Length: 137
Image: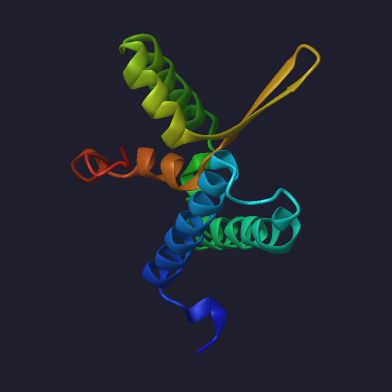
């Protein structure tokens, strides 16, 4: 079976396994049961594997292309207004959770701030309201 055909469930299980292994190593380091030199040998490759699995999961879940109606200015303005309302009318805890769903990273360069969107979360915003209740929490 090709890697691209691998089910998402299998990737998630692998990612969980790697995360559990890393946690055990971190716990052992913190408890003084493991020497730091061991990090290069076991922990670094596991961290690399974790990053690859996370990237694969994100790539597979990301939409292949945005719907055509999004390039119209009136729709972009509607989305901006809806986002502004969501983030200004909710409690800070809710806003924090929503940011985790919609924002992948924040890049600050001097006075410029760029929000990089989380494709799956942003696409969920565009789905009909009935389906939106299933947003990740």
